[in-house]
Length: 109
Image (cartoon, rainbow, N blue to C red; front, side, top):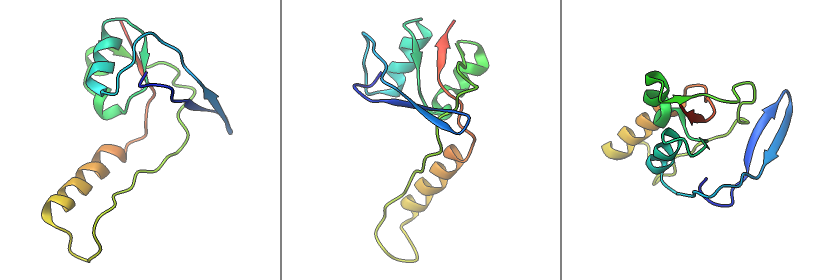
């Protein structure tokens, strides 16, 4: 958990909201992955952070029948038709990372 956030899942067309409780909280994806791999519980993290752990078997996807609801990610940048190269590279990286279908969480083995 990161804090007092709510997790939302889709059950068919219905959005279900859950307020998880836990003894371990962090605002860092790496720390949350380490906790899940150590068996402390489940983590709800982006696939880009968990893919390697799932591929190795260190984490297992759970609740795959209940995906998160659709969400957006936005890049806010200064106006203009030609953004700085670092902004273009970051934007392309985010598109590549988040254009995949999300999978929910993992639980350590």
